[in-house]
Image (cartoon, rainbow over all chains, first blue to last red; front, top):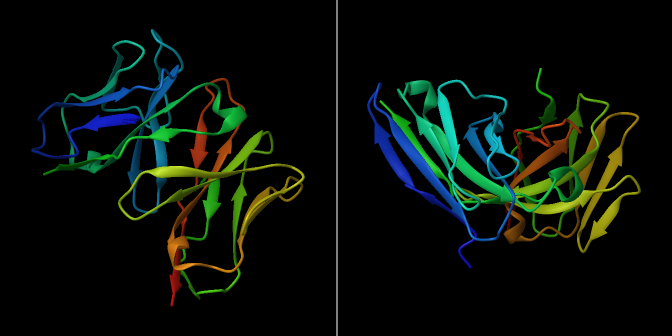
Length: 115
Length: 111
């Protein structure tokens, strides 16, 4: 079972470069999320998509854009990378409202370094 | 001020010990609560939900105190394999259906 797949797993960028993190899930989940995790900060929600065709800002959306390409795929784009965006990025999905089950299924993470 | 706060630890305990973590949350309207486990350099995974009446899953017990706005996780008879970071997670009942994660408490179980 693939579950949630993220690519790339590692990336080094220079300041000002752009890149897209790809995420796909094969569990037929409606909702998908992008989080970043920094030491001592916990996971912080960047953007989410409650269902296909919708996207909404999370806690820390500045500097990012997202696309819910279809039910399976949810991509995160950094248009002009900054050192402050050095982090571990996690994509996640959920079958339904997380207030009910609380269960997010995470990908393995993408480690991004911006020099 | 963080909305979900945890002691980062690390908590260093011997095998077989009982250890407890607390987590406080600031939003009194929060509706649901969970504990996640995250192994080093891995993704988080749901450990258990936290119900108002408390709940137990094997060696793990989770409790909620709404009046004081904290939740707890108790691990009995600690195993080496319990070494991980434990994340406190709160759903604040907002329209966005978002989960808010604490910074995590690191547990290291020693032989």
